[in-house]
Length: 394
Figure 1: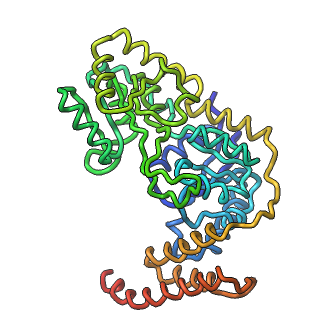
Figure 2 (figure 1 turned 30 degrees about the vertical axis):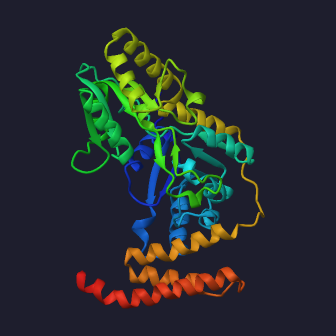
Figure 3 (figure 1 turned 90 degrees about the vertical axis):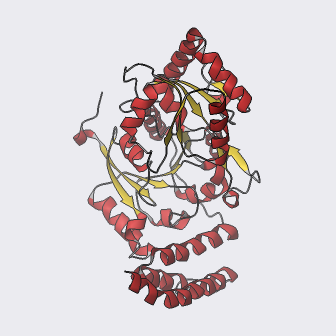
């Protein structure tokens, strides 16, 4: 049963910028909360202290009880930023924890809960003494469902076209298999509703779990060049009542059985699975129904958020921690702060943040402070040289 607006609690989602997944976040949490959204990069005419002050004012004015912060990678949303936000319940959302776990582990210290799309990361956070729960982002049954328009697409891939994925797509095409491609962005991008209808018309969806570990500096546990992660593509295929085949990923056995999600390890196995399903309607139907049932029963967004709310009602709240913040973390954060304002080309925000970073008030003169001061000053000099040209371009 849907919760009426007056009965819902209020929540604020703090994101770095507008993105493809911000719509999904609002859609999912709107089932249980009156959602407000705040984009950091829309406020870069102010320094980070003023941005935090604005967020705290919104929390008071709108009686916000839950604030969710976007994690992953370096941004203005860091441990000190979250610690300065005053809210009853604070939560970090991480969509790429496979790539950023060590970083998120510190950023989320002042949060009551870590929501992650990675099942193995949930256990890592729990082992570290933090509250954590699996979060299924792209899993709304209101959008992703069986549109009952028949199955006139044999094979579908949707998402970014990396070199790895393109090699598979080219190989599939070379075997005279009809495959439809829908891009993540660019001219062939479609809306979520349009994508859902296309998925529901597809017999088989191909999922590629590969993601390049290009940000391994954020994950000090891993030196691998490539990581394989659970993708929302599988939830979407299941909800739309299409079969899905996937290359292997580390958390697969935690979520799916062999009769729900078929796995391939190379291009030849991928093609073999496609042909096997297309030539055996009974087998295709079995896998399609098995995946649909498990996703709808356990991982659909409303059920997932219901579990998360139940978990939150029972969990212990965050405890004050005096753990020292590692030098490498503080160094990354401060470099990002000045770099973000520099690239934004807002002179008011840049100068204001420069003063905030270099001011000695309330700070100890440490090696980190000296590094930050020197780097911020170098950026200031570069900015001074570039600023006249930036004005002319406008």
